[in-house]
Length: 464
Image 1: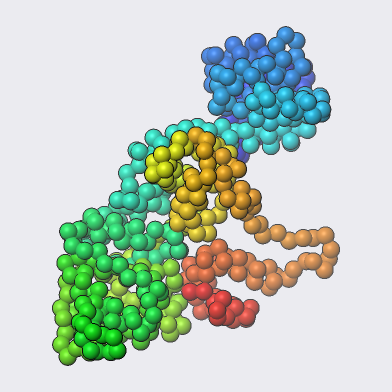
Image 2: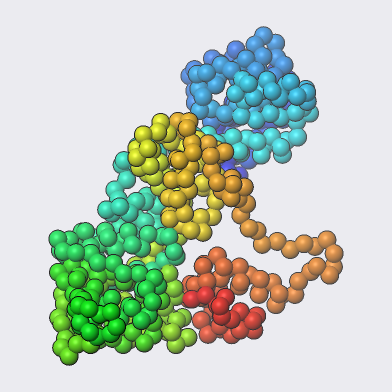
């Protein structure tokens, strides 16, 4: 079946019962597998020497060599190929033996065909991850990053040429995206690859400085302008002269400071607090935010004219959950970095740990992944990072599903209730970004606002 997780998987089935062998062949062929039959372990070993298989499914009790011995041979010589063993025994000792010889999975007879299909799908995914993990270090080395920004996904490959082009410009750049997606990394890369690379990169987090201090921090002050102003101070605009000023989290800039910032950007001069004169500056301005500024404008929290001034050039960074296998590339990159810093023997991920990293939602994006790997490196001691090394929330993560229970008539929902739940789920998945949520849902923003107001979604939960 096209698109099924096991489609195209090459399976070697070893079974001396011809009727069961034919039934397993039919069942696995139904889910898109390419099946090769073998009636004995000896024949299977010969086949394995001349052909490639993704998964081996073998009976245990066969004439001559047993399935356990076959599994042991395969693990010793072709460790990347997962082996599923089938046996009539349900004893604990049999399961322990299967584990000891390196079996990937254990299926009891009589065979439940759907269970076997599921086991094969899991084994095929494990085989694919094993191959991918084996190539990760090479893949990281071969990836062409934009400075420290790493990625091979389609979403990131589309961004890199845009950023290289933007780096050659002096126009204001707005970087948007969820927290932790790497907005500051982009700002550093654009600066480092532009004509101002020899000048300073001055960074200020607009959310981390009190409004009363931010005016002086940005624009400077004269000696005696306020209590404790014992000497004059050049603001960050002047300090960034000849380089780049990065205004991180500009969506948190107090409304009362926005006109002054707008004038500075338009006139290329600043007036320090308490000064009677203006000071010119020559700096490129890059701003970033995780907020939906267009929604903030409609809510009266951000000036529209300032928005257009900082948004001459614009790039939106995708969340990590939208970057597919970049999760593994970045994980390997962080493993190489932190293991080298600590001189530990850790080199790569185990396939099972890689699977967990891919399944997790990463609400904190690249920053959360980086912190996760740094923490794991601090406690792991084997050459591979294992599932047990990962934080519990990553180990136990289960993606949220939108389900309706139909057990009782009173549990059925009206279409209005279904719509409300879906809209709120989409809004949550997009980090509260109402502009993107409206686009995803096919609404204009005003329609979405009316529905949210109807649902009673108001500040502080009304995220921009």
